[in-house]
Length: 302
Image 1 (cartoon, rainbow, N blue to C red):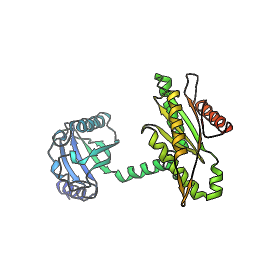
Image 2 (cartoon, rainbow, N blue to C red):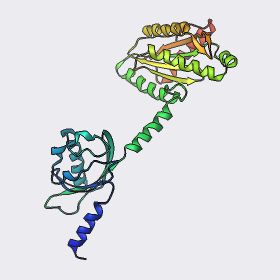
Image 3 (tube, rainbow, N blue to C red):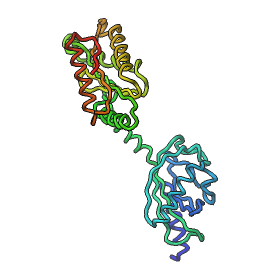
Image 4 (cartoon, helix red, strand yellow):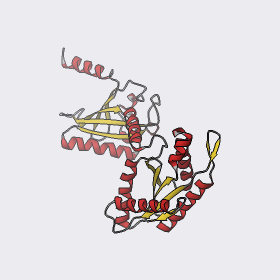
């Protein structure tokens, strides 16, 4: 088989692969467009052949992609990277999945000029499903499955970042810890399913009071912890007392039985003497203990 026939064979084989394969010049022209026949993952890109990336995509994306092309040519090495792309913003027939998609690109420099130009091969793989699964796993690892708020792990990591921000620019950071008064009695009297419903209702009340940017997490059992950035301790105390009062006034319905519940709360704020988050949490926890020792259904500051 001569070189021309061999070349045609390779081109025909490339056309059958599910993922798109491009040859892109250093100026951004798509010299070859092959593969990408899986319509559940890709729009038909055949019309891109002979066109420059700046013709069919937004400048910001074209700049980003061409930076990667030039990096590949300069290093002479395989270049793998991931990116997100809104497919409707690319001038292509819309016969693929549509919407925002995640892709992995694998660029490799051609050893010789292609049609008189330096160029790279670009294999593009749709990894949206993988990204979605990774995000679901991440959400599960940071979420309390019962109440759908953050879990202890997420809260501690987040508070670390907030403390760094406070130590950098003194943006106030406050913490409040609460637990339900006599929660064990609720579980023992009405059962754990009833107790679970009380926890969910409590979270709903708290979310109605806190700002969207505030973090609420289940810290363990019936104990919840919240952080607020940009709020001084006096205002945090007021918000905590508002939460305490709304919970006290709320009628929790447990299998047709109307139940009254109270909570105790300890609040604290970050100080320049804090070297880690444990001291902030410890002060709030001691304040919570004091609130319970003094009769419950109250807010104390640590």
